[in-house]
Amino acid sequence: MGVGFCYSKKVNLNLSLFSDSFSRFERRIYIPLPDEIARRYLLIHNMKKTKHSLTEEDFDLIAEKTEG
Image (cartoon, rainbow, N blue to C red; front, side, top):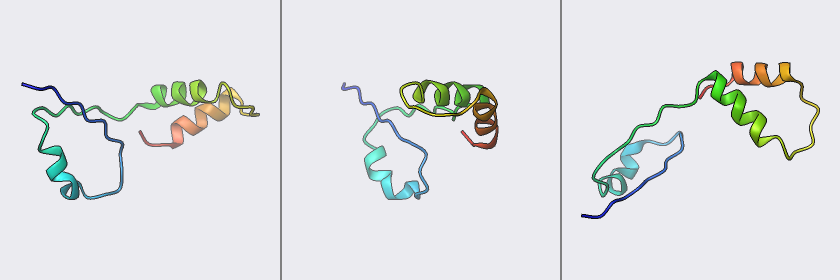
């Protein structure tokens, strides 16, 4: 029995369009969207190599205002 892995981002498309492609996989793992703390960490981590003038408070505000 083969093992398959599917990574899917949150998209604004109807999943019924992709039902054929998803039906090939034997198992589905649902991963929740990141909470506010995780979003803040991801923002800071991904901005490390980018020159910016964002403050800690800016990262807090962005993480608070965004959804998963």
